[in-house]
Length: 69
Image (cartoon, rainbow, N blue to C red; front, side, top):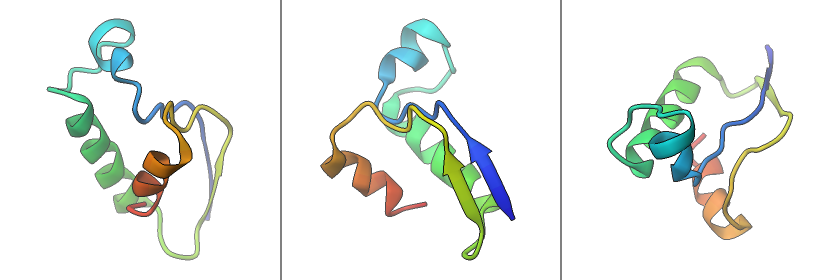
């Protein structure tokens, strides 16, 4: 299966607090939810095309999230 997604905005806490008001307790809670939902859907041989705005952090921190997906 091939999936297309954009605007995940990992490490962008303002989305939760100010902009989108996503309703999570904090950034970590938001990350855990998104990772869990991703892993429920995406399987080992699936292809995911991320169109943009994956993370607001540098590679080192973003890599920690990607390793969980």
